[in-house]
Length: 363
Ligand code: 5AD
Image (cartoon, rainbow, N blue to C red; front, top):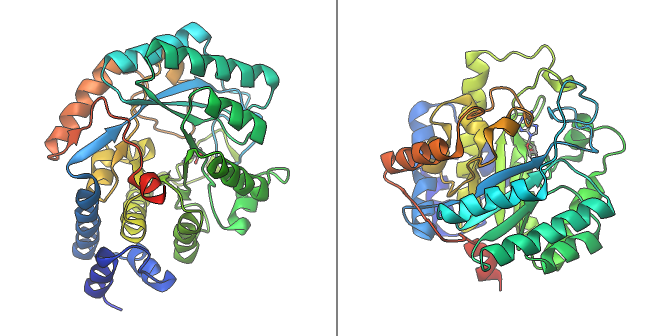
């Protein structure tokens, strides 16, 4: 196996690589080879979306969560978080801000909750936002596993994309990082329902989990292909000190460099294998390095999701350590982001929903 052949094969057509070849890419250590990998994936990104970066404003609506994931800072049994839930006015204000600032699209994210009250709250918010913005603002939901009826109501009320990370497609890892009552099968089922309801469906995994092998990460990419996903959002695993998986972990410079590199290699490998899916350059990359998100774009990602939640709430939505931009106003973040994107020769696709080309290719 050699890198040159693998990259040629992958750029010629999608789904061209074997599991072994994907593993080869993920296991690259040599700096020059790594740059070649990023460069090839970036070339494909250019082929599908040009020098354009899609942008979504992320609204962290609340951190109350019914789940107890061993890695996550807002897990139910972490007593050290102040729980909050934005009210209608706050969500409308932030959505309006996004619309006025030429965002084509927002993501509404929160901890996982299943109740009629929550379902109805989100449903009416979706209608209000859609009315307020004359339907100009795309709306992605990231609200965890939900029953089919709930997802249908939200779709009818104006949501058109949904993000639900599988976290790891290896059932063995999934079981190791979640309590017993968290079901892998239900999560997969939920992704299938989203597809059936004709959402643009996004999923993804954490990269560099303890004990995770290159074979399992290659398996994640195969899972993305099999599920025919429209968007991929993945990021390196980062420890959070108030969680079972964040105790006694090494957060050394070396660990951070490894996590960043693996995260970037994974973005490239996904781009090379799937070609036209939307791939997010996630905040977790930025938590590892100041310019982590730009590096993600240059490794083949084409979407960024800056946080537009009011800073007063951000500190309570820490999923991992080192969360960036906790004290920054949304105006400052956007100015900074525009500058950073321009600095790598890319441009933000303002006022566009930035829907997944893969979704349209499928239809
Ligand atoms: N490190 C990295 N990502 C995390 N997430 C939650 N906790 C962590 C962590 N410690 C990710 C999960 C979740 C998304 C919202 O944040 O993948 O789906």
